[in-house]
Image (cartoon, helix red, strand yellow):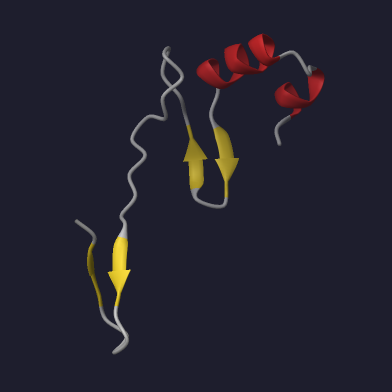
Length: 58
């Protein structure tokens, strides 16, 4: 993790850091809004079938 996160073990300080900075991850850079929600993060949930195809889960 980035140096700013390694400087504290206080959850409030870590939350403050995350709201003000992006964090590089294997999924790309992540950022959070003031409420603590991820910005622009999308994912899909799929049903995988025996024949190797997938459809959107409903």
